[in-house]
Image 1 (cartoon, rainbow, N blue to C red):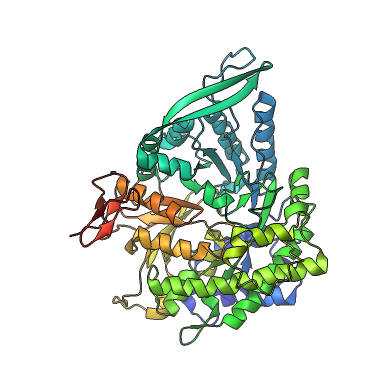
Image 2 (cartoon, helix red, strand yellow; image 1 turned 90 degrees about the vertical axis):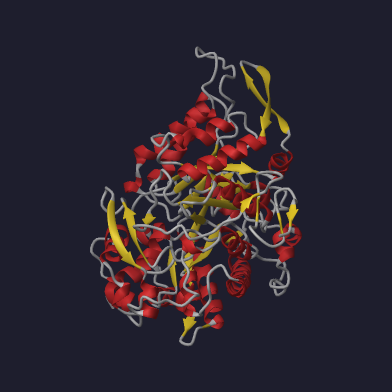
Length: 596
């Protein structure tokens, strides 16, 4: 079998393009190895894993595909979070070093800067006052740009809690599109913030710090409604500033009741909340490959593949324990052992089954898929815990008391309550490169379009554009211009339905989900405000929006998108949420109701 045969076997020539070959050759093939040698290397010689790869049912994420079995200074982990910087010159620049070291090893990295004192605060040096947390954010972004990782996008995530005095500087930074271009930014928000937005009351915040042996307290009144409106405006303009629902993150995981566990931040695409110096290995099941002829999912094979993939990620974790960029990473892995098994090809699978993405049928479809994955991944982790040892901080009582376990207890009834290899098991990464290489939809996303242009810089060291026809459309419908009603793309789906789909999956995902909600050009800032409110209420852990025609170019584009999606009108009461244009409806932001 060669690379082209791997892609096209049983599917057709439309699944092979120059872009896919370029990805494999330039990112993952090593020293001219042929396809079979490549599979042998990345599978670690495990015949079950090799078969899953050859059947296109599972792929490790890029770090593993590129570096497993190769003697080089590089990590197998895609994701890292380092400790927030200590509020001193030494601490700030030590964090810059840790970012550089992590990037140099090939890992993406996240850091939260909420520990740094605000702009104008006194310092015990010649400067007398500090330039503020956001100025050092730019230092970290510059570090990311210098290291480069061969043009890899989104290698750095910088987050800040909404209660930091410099929050407005943080959220407005990227209005200047020349700033922090190699960093993703996300705002940490919580219940108190959304309550303050709804009430419109200004909220007092305090920031305490020490300098020159003296303690200072910075106090400020924050207009949360104004901050929220600014976030929505900037997201509308630039598609920047992701939203992290921090209370949802910290209160829904296997270890949310563990006395020694705390999240420190999120990875560059936000699907992995991690503790300080935590890391995560990623891999994804291709759900499309489990759909049989006749539009039925083979759940028996999905269960089997889930167990094999869970074991495979643990094998790689053991194998790569000494390949982390910082000594603190190894210690953290031994304590918590996070892995991240996810999916791709979900939208393709729905099309094969005649299910419209965003519909109630799609939510039911997702429910069945992720119940199977959670049950089998968790129980395989338990089997591995018994055979190899539990994660270092294993606490059976804390797991049983966790909100995540209680919500999914019926699925996990067969757990012996004594063993678990991993403190974090499931996630949904964007899978941009590996899903493109396979020719399937990425992560949990719907089909972007029936055809599109993809921009990449990491393959050639500069921006290069590829015309891509969505293969599943060609496979199922040939060159027909009349497509069934269940064929929908990202720009056809109302954001409320996108949130419902993400929420349906999040119930069974103990980590988080990377998802970008595409909006048409005519979407308003109030639509974005409503979207953010709905996401928090639905229990999402994070969300990003991208409005067509905003200032920032997307990786995927189509020539022209019709503004056909009709959204609702602003709530006349709170002016934050929206209500339907007709019939009886209620604003989920303030509770205002209207009929007719």
